Length: 183
Picture (spheres, rainbow, N blue to C red):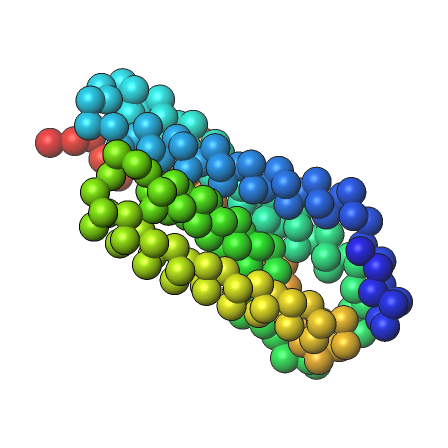
């Protein structure tokens, strides 16, 4: 994605591959979360799904960081005094991904023929709100990127520092003191 004004080129395959993989992780997470909410699921099934969710969530966070790292490498870093944005583009892209999943599934509910009219109307109203939120957030991302390229704003790579999958940091995994043993 070249930007003629700023003279910056981001390799589309690299960044798009990361964005697509990150969206896929959100897609998979969405459906694993549905499985975890199944009222007929056994405790063993829920535990298996929870482990899958943890791995997917770790991958998702790693991909968000990869997106930000790729974008940081693509822009000049000479504007260190520019105001710092509180949220990097990767997190905004992640939020847009989640919104797109909400929109897709809300649209399904708004069009579901077996649902009541009240259910469909409720979801149609929700759909309108979600679409507005997505438009707003996409505009925020676009504005941020233009400001970054112009040197008017900057962002940093924020590491998520997740602890739940790390056997050296999670006491349940390493069997350290203070491990919750249940009732």
